[in-house]
Each structure stands twice: as structure tokens, then as C-alpha cells.
Length: 199
Image (cartoon, rainbow, N blue to C red):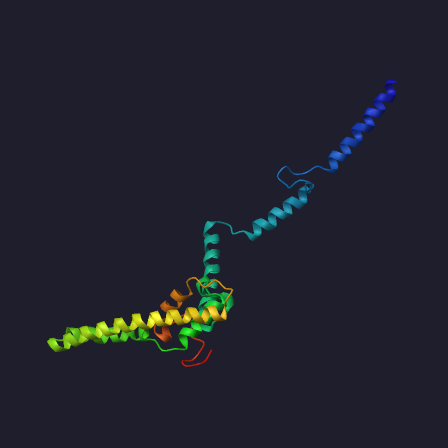
């Protein structure tokens, strides 16, 4: 009787041990995954260690090189208009349509810098009449820029609502006005349409 029990206990213990061997796992590994063999774990560590940089300086150099590559792609995209690599603020079909809308028209605001230089030179002359004219020109220029900006903003909003009724149009008018203040050849992304071109 004792022998029979001990044999049953041994068989039960053997089955429990076999099951536990099958389920043996690394405490840090996810549940249900067996522990890898020591040789496999070592080879994995070696490959990971080989792919990592040896020290902080090498890691920083790799990050700088990767960042330079991204910036180079962005510069090319800004020059050529490649949508994939544009900065986030310039991405999307709505922003592209707004850029084309601005680039296809003349704006007083883009003449601000050259006219400001001329007005400053006139204001430095000793003649009082010329100084008065320069002040008047300042006033006319500012009123013209504000007036055209308001008109362009309203017209652009109407056009964007017509073309993209289901898109989010927040910030598009401000984005376009900032673009209209820049001289045409200094705009980024570079203009892809000619002046007067119908969209």
C-alpha cells in the first residue's frame, strides 16, 4: 500500500515538474514565453551591443548626423515643394492651396521692405517737405497693407470653405497673411505657381 502511494506521488511529481519545465520563463519576459537558451541570449546581447554606439559621444554624433539628414531633406522639400518632407506647419492640401492662392496674386505687403528703405532715406533728408512726404507715404503704405490683408483674408476664407468644406481651416488665413508679407523670392516653400495663374 505504501509502495503504491509513493509510486503515484512520484508520477504526479514528475508530471508537475515536466509541466513546470515547459512553462519555465524569464521573470522579465512576457507571460507565456519560454526562457531563451543561454547561448541565444548571449548572441542577442552581442548583436544589440554591436548596434549601439560605444559611448555617449558616438550616440550624440549619430543623433546629429540623423538630424542633419532630416534638415537636408526639409530644405530640399522647401525648395522643391515635396510634401513628404515639409515641416508640419506647411503640410497638407489646405496649406498648399492657401500658398498657391497667395503666390498667384500681387500684394502691397511684399513691397514693404524696399519701400520702407526708400521712406527712411527720404525722412533723413533735411528738407521739411520731403520729411512730410515720407510720413504721408508711411501712412499710405500701412493703410494699403492693412486694407489688402483684410480683403485677402476674407476672400481666402471664402475660397477655402468652398474648396474644402469638411477640412479644419483654423490658422490658414494667418498662415497665408504671413506668407504675403514676404517678398516672393524669399518665400518658403518656394512658389509653385506664376502670378496671375488661375487655380
